[in-house]
Amino acid sequence: MKEVTENQKINPQVTTIEIGVRNLRSITIYPLSLGDQLEMSDIISNTLGSFFQLEDQSEMALASFVLELIQSNLEKIIGLVIEEDEDVKKIMKELSNVQTVGVSTLIFEMNYEAASKNVRSLFKKVKSTFLSERPSPQSVSDTDTNSKTSTESPLKEEE
Image: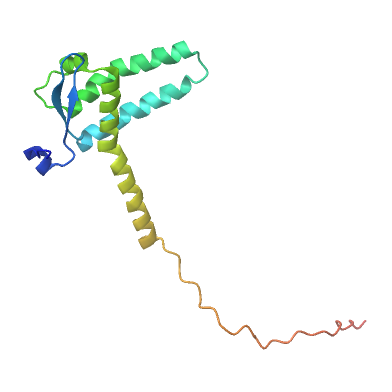
């Protein structure tokens, strides 16, 4: 049976993962605070904007861009989600590429995926509560309107 740590009782999003290229060890990944999420969202937005500007360039330029992105931001992002007393540079040296993708996926799922679903659900609730359509008049079950349509031709105008 999986042991539940005190941190997980307080915040069930806290996750422990195994990292290491030669020797595995556990590190704890914490959810981002709201302030850190906003900061990370800015990094992602700016990066995606730059990324989409490169779509007409060569694969080599794209690969170079991705490497620069990882080098300039991954260390900062990892630093936001680990224990404060952990050495970020040491963790970066211990992560394999596969583990890095796993950590990135975990960070996204933990901080953005569930929140995104909850926000969509909230917007639907708000919309249904405040923007609900006015009820249409009840329709009459009898379709007979008792109106008479004239079949006579129109009257001629007098001159």
